[in-house]
Image 1 (cartoon, rainbow, N blue to C red):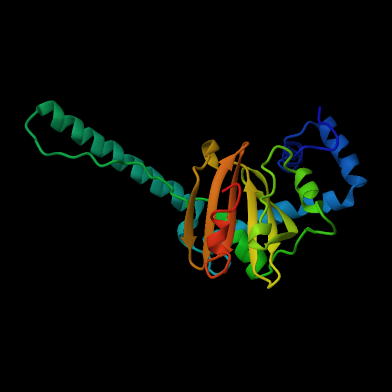
Image 2: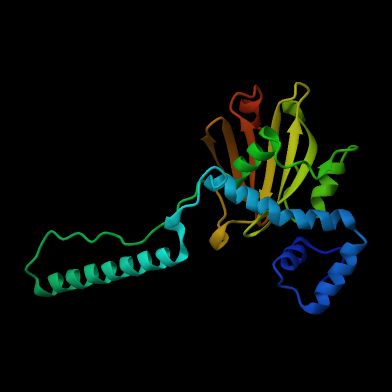
Length: 250
């Protein structure tokens, strides 16, 4: 039985049609009296489509016949046969003991994704391109933390960037394959922008060590804690970028 107000897990289970009929009715009745939350939930899946398309460049690419499911299955079958054939040849060679110098190639296909790529892409879509508008804008001291707590009650507190001259000004809820995510935008008096991004851990419950990486014109500082992955994203030419690397919580 879900509780009200619903937790982030309840909301994501609702989106994924994983609630029981009774819980779904309870949540839909609650959403009917909370139109802002209902609108945000409707936007989450659209956000995920934007992010996945941007990460893969699908918005700029024509239809690719190589991605046809039937062709993909056929290629996988051929690769599987080649793997078994290679394994059989290797087994025969070892059994005969007359062949030396064989080296078995690893036949696994590893999909490598750079840490917090979605945080960097969210910054580009929201801060640089303005494709996704803000869901929430700060109206008073502390409002942004209360807004974030509605969806991420166990997450780290918002970083305090006042020493670097930045204040939180707006927030956007997003959706990932692992659950809801959020991006909080900070600005300084000159209009420079940095973002704080929180999301569930990636596939296989992947948590991140503290680290940083550069992606084009953006710099990401990332870490994990309290069941989530986090990133601070800023343009590499932001004057305060070096200070952000030493801000509290990094």
